[in-house]
Length: 128
Image (cartoon, rainbow, N blue to C red):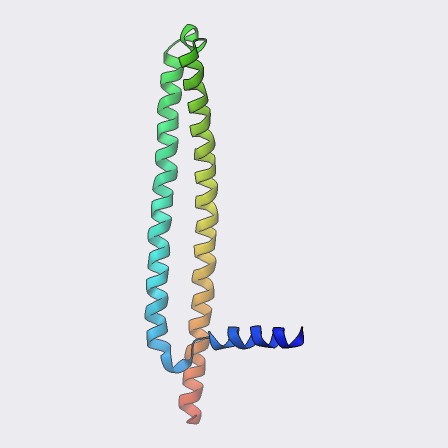
């Protein structure tokens, strides 16, 4: 068990960026964060469009009248509207989770870059 933990530790430590590769890591981080921002915009657009469609269907549902709602097609339409509202709720939840994840990732990457810059300046100062 101890050997496996050391192996995992070694693999994780090997993935840490080195101060010598600071510029490349900064560029890689900027690209990853931009990709996450684009994904967040897409998820936000999908959530809003789902809610718009659900509200339009809901308006149509109540404008059709009570008699039409008791027909088989009216009941199917009613289930479609309920399904769209549920999908809209899931899209909003997905957007919230992704937005929180992206914000935390930005903070972590910012701290990581600051640590790398400090390490690089210490290495430069002490000539390591």
